[in-house]
Every structure is written in structure tokens, then in C-alpha cells.
Length: 143
Picture 1 (cartoon, one colour):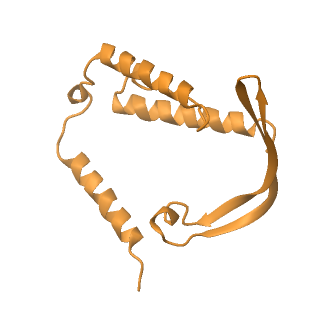
Picture 2 (cartoon, rainbow, N blue to C red):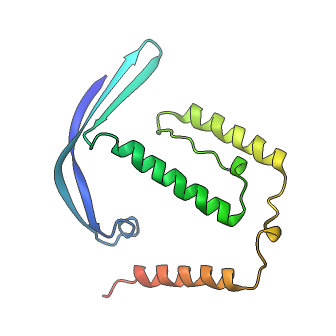
């Protein structure tokens, strides 16, 4: 069906600002990505060949999963309430099935019961408000 390649990029500043119309600083790098899309019968196959250090993607994924596990444990969220599914935009059916399964699993677990995990003293609400204020300040652009 198709095949192509493209250069990588590094975002030096503003990776989250650009979605709000604020400029960021981006540079191309000499690493490339090769992609091939083929149709085999009724299936479309995407082969994505990113040139990275051997094992980097797996190690990065492992670190991310460990970080998520620690965060959820600290929050008192049972691991059965979270499912991680790797799906691209082309895998809508797989993602829909995973969402249906997660909804059924969470319904079976019942309410979260956050009140057992920590006492509400207002600090959490203030922390959330501080984050919103910091975000709004970061989005202000001098004119």
C-alpha cells in the first residue's frame, strides 16, 4: 500500500504549549523512521522501523509501567482498575474491546472507596487549584 521515511525531531522547549498556539523550539535530528504499510488479505499490516538503541523501547516501557504501578499503589487504586493497552489509531476494534473489558472489570470491583485511602483535609483541592493557576500563568503570552 505504501512506504515512507522521515527524520526525527527533538522538542527543546514548549512541547505542551504548542497545542495552545504558543511557539515551541523544535529541531530535526538525523535519526530516521521507516514505515511500511501492506495489505495481506483482509488485514492491514504496519511495520514501523524506528532506529533506536537496542532494547531502549522495552526498557523505557518497563520504567513507565513501574512508575505507573508505584503511583497507583500510593493512591490506593487496585491494579485491576487499570489496564494498559498499546493500540494505534488503526487498531480501533482492539481498543474498543479493551475498554469494554475494563468497564466490566471495574463494575465488578464496585466503588473505589477513596475515603479509606486518605483523609480529606483540603490540601488536595488546594494542590489542584495551584496546578491550574500555574498552568494558566504558563499560557500567558506577553503582547
